[in-house]
Image (cartoon, rainbow, N blue to C red):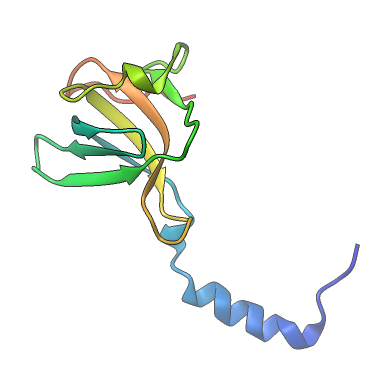
Length: 113
């Protein structure tokens, strides 16, 4: 295993401080779907009326039941459904869905895996 030269350590430290830590962390957003297509999904939080759009990569297959035990195809997601979306913004700063959970009501949260 090669080690990092000492001359590069300050540069690595500066780059690490400039990149926001939130860009690396996954977040969860709950709401009702208002738009679903093959490349994106738009969800509105009924409590705050905040709406977020999420990009969906081709061949996305991360759709689950609330308990995470049942998997679904993307065609099972429809406008008007309550969902929980785990997302991040790592790829070019675009918000994209990592996992989508189909929930039954606004009080339900994603169970711990």
